[in-house]
Image 1 (cartoon, rainbow, N blue to C red):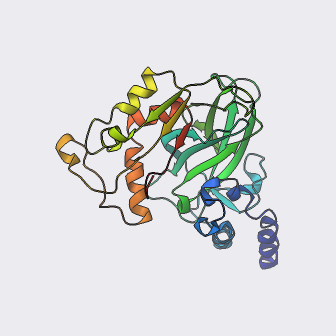
Image 2 (cartoon, one colour):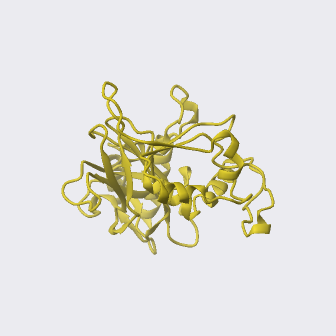
Image 3 (cartoon, rainbow, N blue to C red):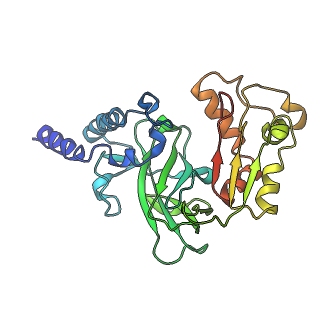
Length: 297
């Protein structure tokens, strides 16, 4: 009887399959027409369901929220989500603005000694037309993230007005009191209307090393731009990170890891850069348009 109920329950959970995983664009390919660079959310979902089967047989000591009973929400595309707390380690960011939408980004790392690879993290987002985040959000939703994408979350806020400033925030689905810092962003003007915004061009060719190589030094340009300009959109022409090790230890900026070769290496280097207060402030201050330089971001 228990086995039959288990099969029925897991089957019911699979009806919406990858809905909340697919809402997270971090799983998608960054290149149109190149699906080989995307993550297979069906495979990730299957892994979560397999973990659910084990937990339903013996869940002793497991401290995760059950989807169907979680705060009255209908998170029915997998049986468990992480409820042990999350940390928005890299604050927030937004980018690639259109006249009616904007991409919102954060990183929500599970608290604890090590990331749990068996269950997803659930993160909600809301976007408002005022800095106090009061009234009804213009757009909102929930999405999952997991270790497959380094617990990053990228969602598209839609149905926005052109040439308008917005403010947004993320939260832990299992504990809405756990929130990210507030980020400011904006949409672009409609194609048939003259723009009314300013741009800041980062890392012009003569400033690439000085601006963006943390281990070399003089990494304060981001903070200056964030706190001393009235720019609405930040355009970064690269390089955002560097693959080499360098000699940052001499100035108190010892780089983590090794010369970049694997996905883990790149994530570790990006994570180190994204702890810089000036860079964090620049991402919080407005949307970014980043341009690939040669073969790296």
